[in-house]
Image (cartoon, rainbow, N blue to C red; front, side, top):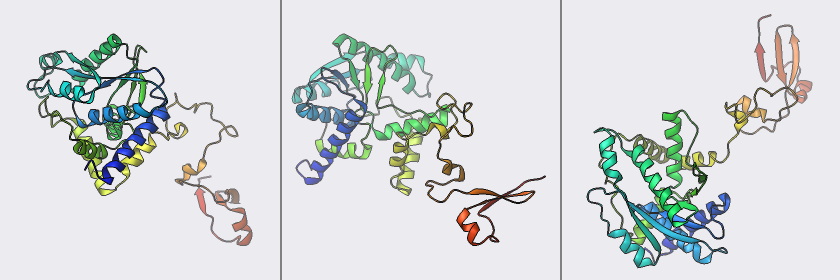
Length: 314
């Protein structure tokens, strides 16, 4: 497939989406040293390939160092990634840290290991970035990961929160970037198959069927099957937030809201998505009845029922 027009279109689309994400969030700047985290899965391979391609024609200079964390999972094929890195001529660092034993010791049998494993892995990555003098850390999360995280936080954490395409570490020492933020998982999977990457199996932690993320992924897959484009709409919504139409008092000053001060699209109060009709006005037709009517319509037919009405006790 690598020689086909479909492949070149796919490759161009992925590179364009990564380039747009980098530009939109100012992910990469002149002089950056980027620690590119490689798990051996389709996402990290694709991220590295696209970053290397963009590096060749970028108007700025930045350095890429590929990094793999060998967590000492039983059966991990430790020779695969070094051989791949050497074959493409990229700088790399393999870091060995037996986090697997710690996770097995601390997490009860049958419980999911992802939370502790992630924290341990994150600590090692941050230390490695500091040792290598890298100021940016690139992770291979894509659009679908971001949407899944949004629903995980919504359903199980009670928060409207996802994976940001760019964030600062807690100590402010590094910037974490997600160059694949605009890329669909299905496109990445197709690209990885065409590139014939030496994929390392993703089941090294064992089967964890009770993972909530898997349940959310299955839900989104069914949604997309039933209504194509729904996941795209959810992702777009994450970049088009209207704080005045939510309920977070830290994002919008509802207490200071008063008549004549706010300029908010009141169409949404009536369930409309667009509001272009003539504004309605009050008309007291009786002591206990208030009508909302369009002035022009009332002048032409004063005896016609109002568009909307509220009836209240005296």
